[in-house]
Length: 168
Image (cartoon, rainbow, N blue to C red; front, side, top):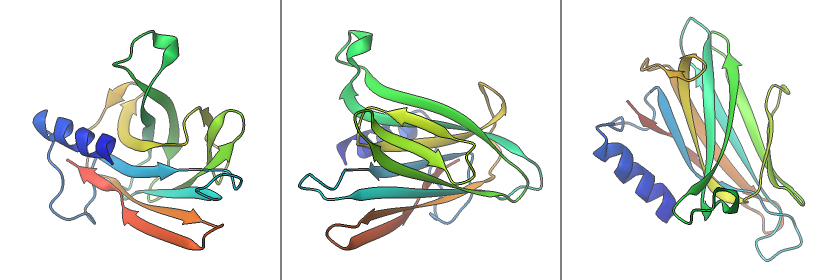
């Protein structure tokens, strides 16, 4: 929760403005509550499902960054948040579902339903930021993306959904 709140504050301080309505499209989406746990722990078997839709009549490249508030020991710096990056393509008016599951001993797996994304990250809790790129590494500012997140706990029988937070 603190990491998501801090991200929102930093983005707003940098001049990025959140859409007034969470159902608006934007070039940047934040999924603030990613969770994936194995069934043997206190949290129970938990998975996250993330959808992203390209509302444009043209294809786009989407850059994903899974961010966790824990330090990355490989960086040798306690001020660094672990980040796990990947990209995928969305054709015109395309929707992709990303499934976040536990992946022992690697932490979590982020897999797309169509198999175009397959990434492992070592932390079970974090947030995901998706942005549009014109070419790899070149952000675009077109308001094309729309998304939603569903977290399901199979062990305890609960689920919740929230729209991805759009920033323009």
